[in-house]
Image (cartoon, rainbow, N blue to C red; front, side):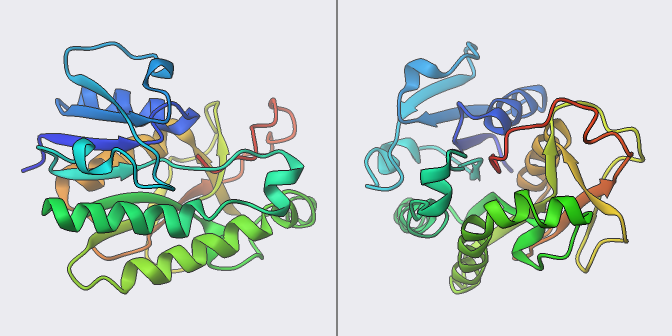
Length: 232
């Protein structure tokens, strides 16, 4: 039974929502960040820790008394980073998994993207704009998914999220699917993604799987304030 999670990327847009969803579900959270002082949620059930997944610093300490790991890690969206992203999804998660094995923790829920499967989701303006800009990120996510499957004892779920939105999307809520989602489904609200990741960690849903978690476009993406291109 999951009682405490280690949350990686706790200061990111999705990470903060995962933390709140975990607390709402009655979980204790070890909240990891490069600077724990940036963690905004204060609660007796939140234990801030300093972690650098690229070097592995702090992971062994952070994993103490943890039942599952939720990773909301992601990279910035500035042009320099997009052209040459650090190997956060691959090398970073490999460091996490190695530390998990040392700690005897086998449950990992992390974020991937719909476009790690194929680049033909979304309208033409999106495929020729944001998708092209994030090509190297999505390539890294594909490599991450292959790496996860190479650990036989790892109970992972890599959630293939859509284009992340902060606001409510005026269409039926997202549904998880193992295969290609229905035509026109390419959006995901951050809060829905956060709740689904916590659900997977608590209920052991979608073990050793890469579910797509998206809903249909509502025709208002360009009318809303465009979200950050980051995948976390």
